[in-house]
Length: 366
Image (cartoon, rainbow, N blue to C red):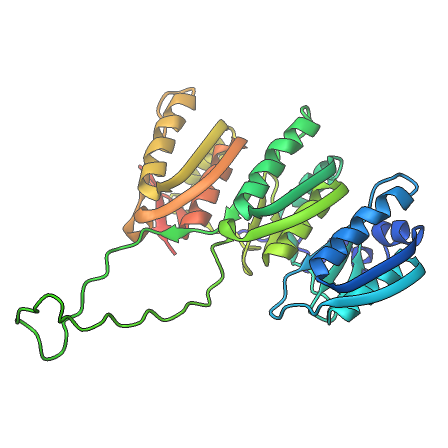
């Protein structure tokens, strides 16, 4: 049983969620000479506040201001203000739109919720140390416009390496497995079984019910502009805007829906031999592993060959994906990570547990 050494939900630190922080302090030093909004959208008003704040700030950069998507559209904003402090201007704009504002760490968050909710952040063993290392990587400026979550996170991972080439690798996992879609068999029309339907006289197809399901995490849309933001704070805000949670492990960060703070089990069925296998896998570093919409069975086969190449004894390991999990479609990228950790992420994304047996490692449905 893998028990987290440290698990923190809904908080990075107790003080980071207060109505203070670096964003509030910076905004408090800014005073707008004049603001005129006539039936302006909340997005346009926020963009103007952000842009107009830069030349007024001591360091000539704007404070971070984001809008958390709501269920109802914000109202148009009509305001005429003069000589107004930036925190008050943000509050008045949010209230005029029927929204609320919350200052948290390096961000002002405008949201329909009252108070604006913040994403869950969990730290599993080694995660707090990894987050602390990544806090030293600061993005001077970053902007996304209608990007998918996957596009944004892949860019963040790559850019983090450019900003700190000698620092730790920022592996990011999107916990969003998808099953291979099977063809839906046609249903017979009552009363017409076995008859020939004349072309042009077929009954109209049944209407397809509208779906209200949220898009798969990697495809959720993201619009964001930030300045001088450390990686942990950046990932927290991306989670906020995409409706996900954040989990810090020792070698990667996981963004997923509620419940992703738990990892799948490694089931050891062969006692001491299994422990030795796990130790060996933990000491094999995978230089790079990348899959794009690949079946779990294909991933397991490729990984098995890769492990044989990297095993100094040349033996390798048999990897098997059993049951429906074999058809799960996986997309992920990992660099410089222990083989055991990579296998656990494959298990997590395929909805399986990793089972260690005498002659194989089996991805078994939970």
